[in-house]
Image (cartoon, rainbow, N blue to C red; front, side):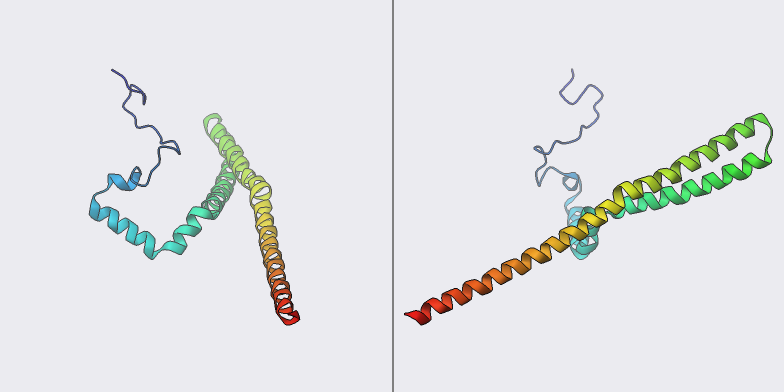
Length: 153
């Protein structure tokens, strides 16, 4: 017998409609572990928000990819220039090419993803400040108009 989730008894990912407050990974924990996890989140809320809504994981992945890529690239270059035998030459070429592709891919991702998002956030902050100033100005003019209406009676 098979069910909708498949014959392999592998749990399937929940759709957004199926996610409810009681239907999450915390519900698999015991009551004490669940309370401790929620208390930890409450104690570290700013850090958790930065991790959940910020770009921290992207920056870490790009940083690790860049460092590992450069290290593998350098190791492949050193091995390639010192080894002339066939099996090690293949490994050296592979490391050299993989390292080069990894660190240059990170650089491309940085210029295509990180910099435009930073500029977008800057523009969003600028617009937020502008809109707040316009609202404040409109409130000030509204108070002056209502104050003038009372003086003319």
